[in-house]
Length: 269
Image (cartoon, rainbow, N blue to C red; front, top):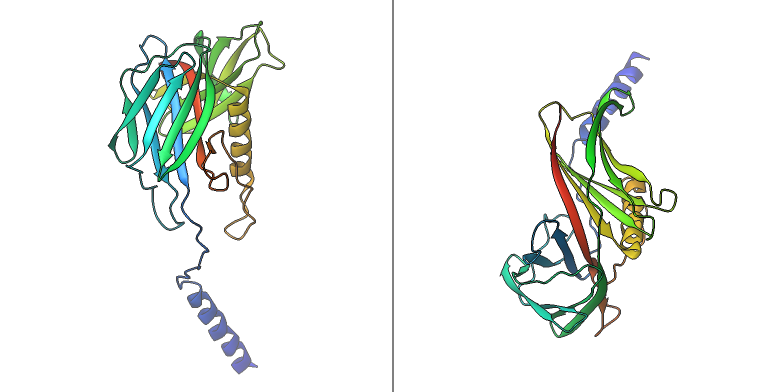
């Protein structure tokens, strides 16, 4: 009986030791796809002339970052026919320093890479200003975390969608629409157990389109629910509004959108 117990102990020790081995999982790799990060943001109080668009390609699971595309032709055209060419600077970032933003004006993006044309059309969405900031100490699961409320007044005559960015050590995104709050004074909300007095919190409110709101909502929902580990079935591909006019099957990732932005910095008390 003692011998049997000894064998079991040895087996368990060997089993625990084997768990420390590094296992490389062979993953099926697909062809790299184009990623177009085309966010035109016009901050209140600025001319909005300096804009950037990043063009990159997807990379394999084990690689860090996405390689920039340096041979693209990038143009944005306004509804009155004005063309704004974006010139490559570095690591796939294309810059235009004379962009002319106009609220509620429609713009068309055109990107040409390797003889394939990618296009999207979107309207520059306005946004109301941030009225004021309120700090409380009743947030989180404990009810004792610091919480920040950024108040704004939603216009009653329009259907509006908002993207809030709260920037601390990380960036947190919050989405809002006015179906049940139309015309009211409401707030964007941020709370974290890591917030402490003296921290600087960057706050942005952006006006976004309904289609971009729905795109971000689906994207956030899929990221938030995919917690079953590396062997769980992956969510369906979320496509943006950019279409490959040359080859529909070779669709890109990313989104073309234009937003007016109001921003402020709050120092936690």
